[in-house]
View 1: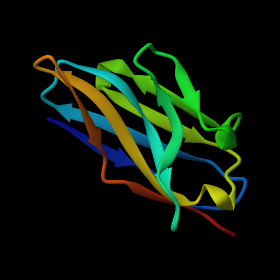
View 2: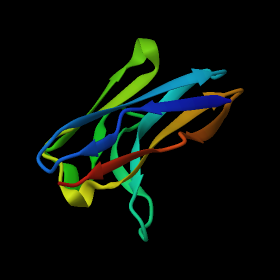
View 3: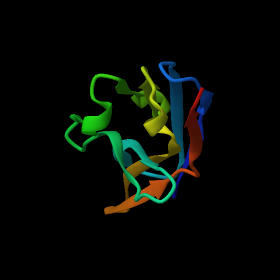
Length: 119
């Protein structure tokens, strides 16, 4: 079982920056994909940015050019650098991981961290 612990977030002014971190721990053979999703009030959870199983990156159109996902494989940690933040980026951000164990693939979610963009 994998546990995902997120950190970062909080309140930021429009145009500001923030960085989220997500560290994976627990028992697993490998982490195959890892990324960030977000859910705003009254909306469905959707992809923000993620590393795919092939090592490529996917970004939501709304964050391209402003957000950057990166990772430290040695630490099983993924980061989300968010620049030029807008009020519409306000949401709970969730870390997500697909991992392998005993020949099966599982999915894990973090507890979520609030990002509020407001003046």
